[in-house]
Length: 382
Image (cartoon, rainbow, N blue to C red; front, top):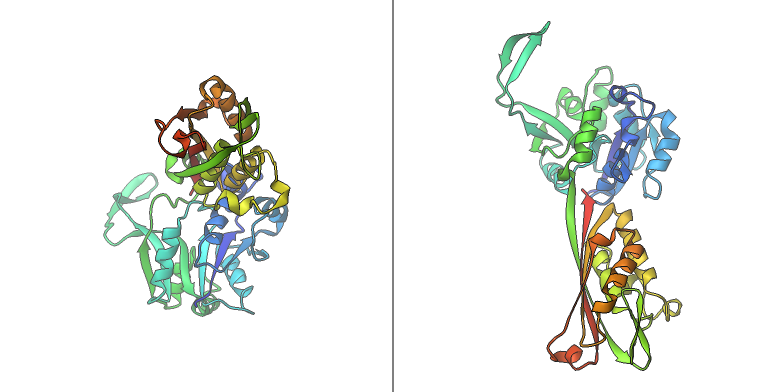
């Protein structure tokens, strides 16, 4: 298999932003710019490892920003971007990968599809860069006046990641060390390499000004909505109460289960785990584990929403349907919505609880147990 390492270039100071914090460490949504960028490569199945090139003064900022992520140790960059990339490449020399991806930390919303496009191009080319065809009319100006109109045919705006065969790019950087080049495609071109151009997209925006940061923060295009479906069922057994949606309800029977058998919270838990691709409730709380015997199911749901937030997800809404002939859900509906909202840390207005029967059909209709269906939606940064 071909090995791939991603180098994330984060050694710049971002002076156009003003202030003391470099732009790559500023917040967008719940996370920093750099963490968003790094995660795209860590989560990609074709990328084997990720190393970040940082400024020597940013060790504390960097450590806080990437806490908990499995990264190679960072390396210090140089005075110019070209120097920083070269230092990153040199740090890989003892165990060189086949291919290397170079990406700007200030591009937090690169997609897995774009990474694939670059890697696919390396099957034939020794280098590849993302780009967007120029669609605006271009003007050359001096002293505030137009001097000429530039033919835009064949012009592209370069993006990252840019991908290369590692050995070729190392050699190219050695040949061009005295030049001041602004990206690695230019380094490769100057060294005589053939560089393929692969179409990128406008969402892969580079943050260069406060206006760019606001555009990303406000723009729905950098988020996607994921939906999760949960289902659970528990049968009745001896008892005088049961728990639904975290609310204890007096009843002539109880629900049987390894935990408190809260069929509604179990279905919501599975829905949340499904929306963030984190398996199911049995993976995290197996019924064979004695520590969960009789446990309150709010612990399961709290853990699920924690995993969703770690994955960059923000819960939008929950809709649960309880299927049973009895007990009556209506008198407890308000308390159920309030309890679910408390567990999830969201507004009650984002929680809906419904109940229905099966018209005496099936096991629910025969009064043998209760089923619950849940749907949740998560707003997840790309």
